[in-house]
Length: 388
Image 1: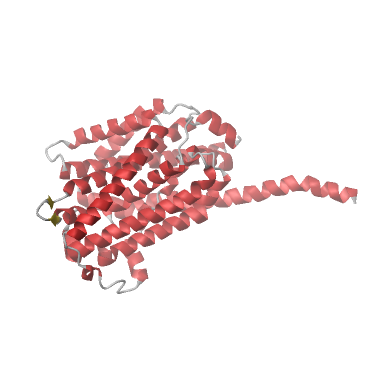
Image 2: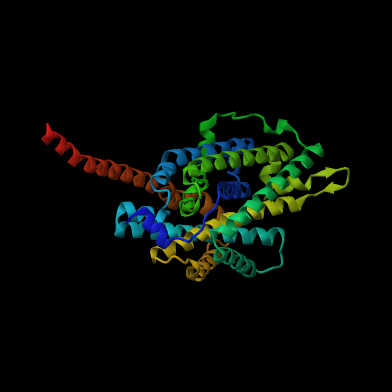
């Protein structure tokens, strides 16, 4: 099946520009890192750990995801699997990845619901909050990728504005003490990487953008946009963590449920600008909303492609039911959540899905490319020998 034919018949008719795609990727990465950080083990080096994660993501894009995308820029991950691994294997792999997208969407929905109850709606039942979230992302998915892309672009500029405002107020409050950031890498870089492994794998989720990149109006810019978005989001989160540690100190950061929120609560400029909690809360939910929408949309579109349907809307309801159920039954307390997200999920699910299978796929694509090239050149070589 040809790439162009697959795209023509089994994908939504939509286009998004480079800035919108950058907004998607920036907010996605920002939402991944800003909420959880990389664990207390790294202490004052948390901001360096973020740079390490960003570096790993950039390497994954340049060495694995980028070459796959450049070979099939008009295909989603479902199409790439079916094109290169055959109908049976490709269908099985597509089902696995679609379930992964839905699974992660369910986990993010639960995390979003827990945070909303903790910081905004403490008396509201979790089921009500989760249902509100499901209805919101279902409506967003129903409107299509172009509408969501325009919303993401607006949210990107809102987040940048909030970030600049927040940084200015923190420094104007005179609460920053760079001494808290010392010593830097006291035990070297390797212990830092060891401390955050395997949870570090969870932040390499850019594979989901294979389901969205075919809508990019200039496919040749896809890898560049991905690399720059990871770079700048990593720098932004790293700076945010460094600033948080410089304000709260290592001990204060370890005690805080959401260190960035505690930092905002210390803001006091002229007894007028005080406790800028809404800035942090809004930033938090922008990142989670975009990430949740991307995973949900990827799962819905993947289901539509497997059933060879151009319209993805009929699959929104079953996908919404699945993520709602996953969000309800996934975790019951913070201890289970930590064990799931920091240990089990990265090692047993995300390591093969985010790294091992894409590596194998890249090898298959390379072998098929050489075989097809040799097959194409073989008749010419025989003809040349006869002429001689």
